[in-house]
Amino acid sequence: MKTRFTSALALVLAFPVGLWAQHRESPGQGYQVQLRLNVASARSVKGELIAVRADSLWIRQDAGVRSMALGDLDRVRVRHHGFTFGKAMLIAAIGGLVTGGAMTAACSSISSDCGGVFVGMMTSWLAIGAIAGAVSSGSAYRSLEPLSYEALQPYARYPQGLPPGVPYDGQPTTPAPSAQEP
Image (cartoon, rainbow, N blue to C red; front, side, top):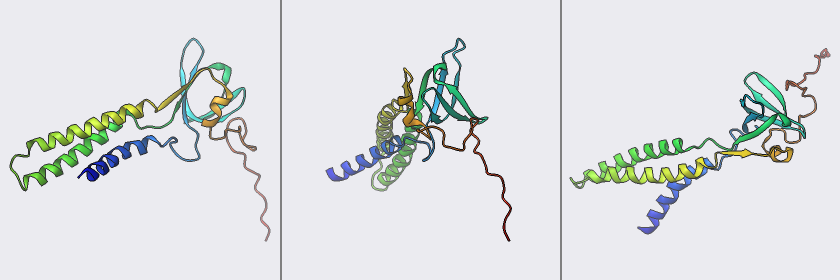
C-alpha cells in the first residue's frame, strides 16, 4: 500500500515539474524577453532575443528584427518557461475532476456513502497544484539588472553574435541565382 501511494505521489508531482523544467519555448530559438527602455516613457519591447554584442542586442518581433543599444535599456526580463500558477491550477482541476469522478463511480459500485471521495480528490489535486504552481511561477521569469553582455549571452539564439551573411535588419542574404548548366 505504501509503495502504491509513493508511486502515485511521484507521478502527480513529476508532471508539473517536468513542464517546469522546459526552459525554451522551442529548441533552436532564443528566449523570449521583455526589454524596459530607460527613457522617461518607461515603455517596454517584447520579442525573441536573437543575438547579443558588447554594445547592442537584436530582438525578433512580429514586425521584424530590430537592434537596440544596451545603454538604452534599463532592464531585461527573460522568460524561462510558461508554466504559471494558473496553468498548474487548471491541470490540477482537470485531474481532480477526472480522478474524483472515477473514484466516486468506483466507490458507488460497492458502497452508497461516497460523497466525500470526490471532495477529497479535488482537495488533494488542488493542494498539490497550488504547491506546484507556486514553485514554478516564481521561476518563470528572471530579471537581469544591471545589464551586461555576459549576462544576456546565454539567452540568445546566436550567443556569439549575428552569423555572417545576416545584415543589420535580420533578413538573411540570398546569393544571386546562377544559371543552371545543361
